[in-house]
Length: 236
Image 1 (cartoon, one colour):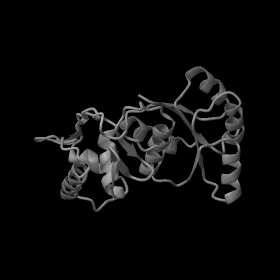
Image 2: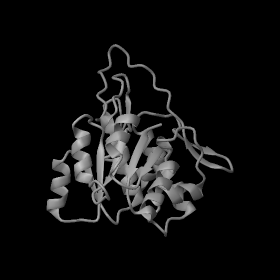
Image 3: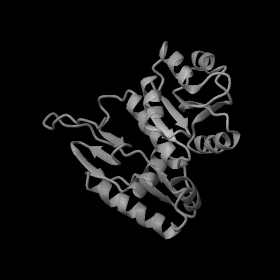
Image 4: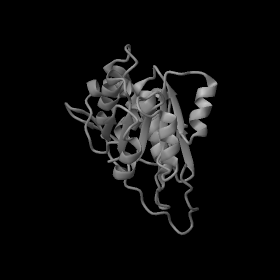
């Protein structure tokens, strides 16, 4: 379970972000000012920091610079300032990404997952890979691309293997900003994803229907490559 430190002085925003982080099974900690950020990162070693730019006591830029003196922990800056110079200052201070308020909770979740996947070391033998930035799935030199909505659904299930999500939960978590998405649309997306994954040569049903409950992701059984097959190059 990845741990995330959220530093945000707007309590309403913080509460909403914490709800989404917990729904995605992240371990989340919240600070409302920049006073104890550096000490908390040193003590708790979070996997990622969500850092507001404008904070009481100590600003986000200063916190970011001090964290970079001893840690390469991924940092996403959150801010209401949209001017280009503000974004450049945040990136120059060592931030990995930048999200301007108001932002979509699902967009933020996808950015978090993309950065965590990029910074996480994966075994060389992993032959099934997911690229959260391009919405592509790859298996043994083949790849397919999902639509944005298909990937939102797939990634929700993929990041929580074996957990069953009802259609209502999928609508809430995968499509939080889409009010016209229906249960029927969820079923259509699942069907399309299954067909695309089959085209990779993975014939196991990675998205499994659970009667009367919903859907879940099941890790496919991947046979080892034979000596005559080329080595797989997973997406980074």
